[in-house]
Image 1 (cartoon, rainbow, N blue to C red):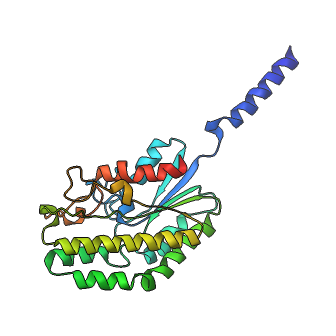
Image 2: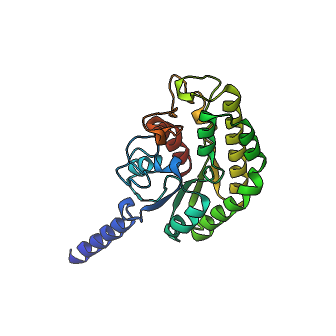
Length: 257
């Protein structure tokens, strides 16, 4: 009986070691800019300086996956150079999930939209789109290849940007003409196409936000993107809470479960 008890105890120990709770948790590192930090959700309790909050998609993904440990370092205003200087160090060999949105600030997308609101921005949008590859491709290559080399076995998810505007106008598009809205969307499309291309070359996964956000642009009846907010301009033209939970979270979960 003593021998049998010993065997049973050994079996229980092995079972415990192999149980799901004993398996190392996924280590998720969320990198990027304001589209990843949660700007637009109106709550920045995790970091007021970087505007990180609990309604941002990385936090929501981690909450939905109890086995996931989140290192959340995305920061509002981040460019590729900022990511490489202050964020990339958090990606390590034991990292199993990485998500990132990056590139919009490198081309001054937010500044362009401000210009559209205050004056004509058509030429500036055209010029930025024309120089996009030259300016941004090598920077994206550096970011994506660095993430991949630091975490060879990780699921790396590059998330695209949505088209902010539809054909409709409203107070949320104050000052922005239909032509400017169309050209801003063309710039978003070009940025997404370039991000997808460079992600593929770096052997990381690209997920487009265009389809999920279709029908939910600024001025739509169920907008997932904020329009112009004169009382809190930083919130303008960013995904709201639905944009994060219904737009971006499913894109990440489609890859990592």
